[in-house]
Length: 496
Image (tube, rainbow, N blue to C red; front, top):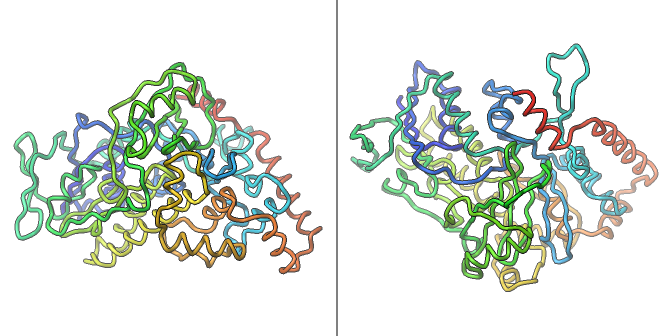
């Protein structure tokens, strides 16, 4: 079986590498068509735990990923200004220490007792105190002098990551690469027959994988292509990546998502720079007004890193259509919040390879992906329910329709605290550990509900306090020797 992946960048080369590593060379021929002339979207990208996990499972050591992707740890997301009440909170990647219990006891304990909610878990504790999960290992029995307390996500440099995955795919894994671009897609009997490249070459395959991003060069030519918009729920439609002149900001172990008058700003610290950009609704603000607002926020001049990017939140209804599979931005896109793109890319790929490529299960696979995308849409939409109303855009957000799941969760939080069964179980979805933090941070759960739960459950308050204090002391001890983002970055520079 011959598989041709069209597109480079993170999604294209991640797809290429996973296909090559998981599928036998005796039965599957893997080729990639891409060119460096096509600009790569982004100025740094945020990932979830799934990124480092999937690379580990195909044999790429964690520290090699960090070095190759110019990465720094991401322990959570710092949400600045998302609720009606001013302030910040961190949503940790690993949730709280009790996030997978039936009830999230530690998180509710923190809320009830006015303790920072980040202290309910190790990753939250570390990020709140500006520590990463890495520390220098002084044990002579270990072969490495850099170790980590637990797995986390990471911030990556988009270009470095693409090159890193490309080199492994071609030099170590034997993938055939066509340094070329697609100029036409030939359809025969409702399926892709072959591609015509700019060089004049014709490429035939059994399966074509579209990793061409928003342009969807391959998939939109296939009969049956249909895009479903999420724009009635998610208004943002334009992004501007930018650089702050004389940027001396600290490398924090979190992605920062800071609201502005008609959208929000992302800050993603990678090894060589802090990737910055903003997403906004162009119906409420112009590009010039965005730039003016950004310069007021930072107190410095900013420089656009590339032309503004237009997008529409939504998904393909059939990501596996005929003999074409869409992966990454060509399959779905919401907005950069919660790093859903690379996460969904990996979940899509792993499920396709494990459950679909060996059998013709298009309907089952498309249903799986639709559920995944809808889960992510619900989760992102929930972030916009904090009641913020300090601009025309945010006032308008309050009037938007909400997905059924969001309304269900909002109703539950009016009556009680959550339990783990409030979310369906689906590979790749955001469940209680993540939703809970957003609910608390946005003010949907309060200390009175937590106090009532504690009383109704008959907890021994002194014993509960003792258990939490012991956990807190453990977090403090574990984190005491961990490196800050700047210290870890210096370590990587010294150990190239």
